Structures are given as C-alpha cells and as structure tokens.
Length: 215
Ligand SMILES: Nc1ncnc2c1ncn2[C@@H]1O[C@H](COP(=O)(O)OP(=O)(O)OP(=O)(O)O)[C@@H](O)[C@H]1O
Ligand SMILES: [Mg+2]
Figure (tube, rainbow, N blue to C red):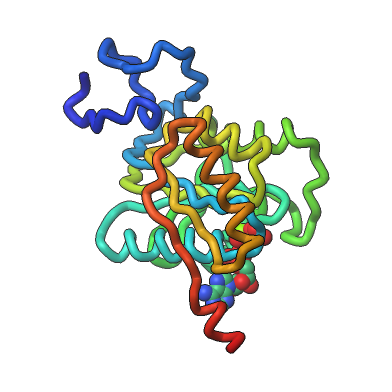
C-alpha cells in the first residue's frame, strides 16, 4: 500500500496488492513526465448551470492557496475554459508530448480551443472521437507538477463523463446545480451515474443567486 493511500481504490491509479476491487481497471496512465496528485471533476448533467464558472473559480481558489493547479477542459464541443482565463494562443508539442498553456497566475490549462485554428471553429466529431481526445488530454499532455487538477465536464451522462470516470483516477466530483425542479431531476442522473461508478461526490454547488436575481 502506498504511503499516500486514502482507501479510495476507485480514485487511484496504483495497482497495489491491497486494491479492494478485482474489477479490471480501465484507468489510463498519465504521461510519464506528468505528476498529478489529485483530480476533481466538476459535473452537473444539466447544461448551462455554471460548471465552467465553478471549475474556474475552484482552480483560482486553490491556486491562491498556493497549490499548483490545472484545468483539463473536457467540454470538447463547448469549450469555455481558455476564455474564462483570458488565455489566447495555441498549445504546442515537444518530442515528448503536448504542453498546456498557463494563465496569468500560473494555472495550467488544456482545451480543444487551444488546438483549433480559430476559437470559433466547430468540433463536429462523433462521441468516441471526442472521448478519445479527452483521454489524450490525460495521457499525452505533460502536466508538470499538479496538486489539484479540475476537469470541466460537458453536460450529460454520455461518452465523456464515462471516459473520465473510467480512464482518469478521479478523487471525486463537485456537482453543480441550480434550484429548479427540472434541473434537479437531470442533476440527479449525473449523481446516480457517479454513485454507480464509485466516484465520491465531494460537494454540491447550488447557485441560489440565480433565483434571487429573478425576484
Ligand atoms: N453565479 C452566477 N451568476 C451569474 N452568472 C452566472 C453564474 N454562474 C454562471 N453564470 C453564467 O451563466 C452562463 C453559463 O455558465 P457556465 O458556462 O459556467 O455553465 P456550464 O454549466 O458550464 O454550461 P455548459 O453546460 O454549456 O458547459 C455563463 O454565461 C456564466 O457566465
Ligand atoms: Mg461549461
């Protein structure tokens, strides 16, 4: 058992003898030059409830606390993270792998919009191709030293969340919701998906301000 064992085998990439589940692991190894300590997904199931904003704010908050922080933008068809951090330009590759870009305060970011020629170019790809790109953001990007990586998820419970939960050792997720019955029903689907896949829910972010604004 590793010294840093937190007893959460679902969120761990090590294949040690104390592993609690005998299920075949689909976890992918990160790039050999990456050193990522904790991965937290930001999920809702529902679109437009503030996942990307919450992802960016969590990354900023942890960065301000002195942790080395990164954001993996797993929303391939609706990438918001570079814009949220004011990052422009293109990610470049070395012989070894791809390098993320850094925000002004040092948060490392990778997003499909850092690879497209123009940030308005649409991504019109089938689900498995999209999920493959997300996997590559984990396996082919050189994430130097990262204490906390936040993954901004797309809406829904499809290919991308499935790939992230199966391929990346996610320590847990933060659920984002807003106080409306319809939103709650869809968000419950994502919460149930996480439970089915043994992914711990670390917290729930409800934006009551949205309700207040409408009063
Ligand atoms: N607390 C808030 N107060 C005001 N505006 C907000 C708040 N949270 C989010 N927004 C705005 O609502 C819109 C949707 O937010 P965001 O893009 O973060 O949602 P999302 O869940 O990531 O959406 P998608 O599912 O499309 O990825 C954005 O324009 C964002 O600036
Ligand atoms: Mg978003």
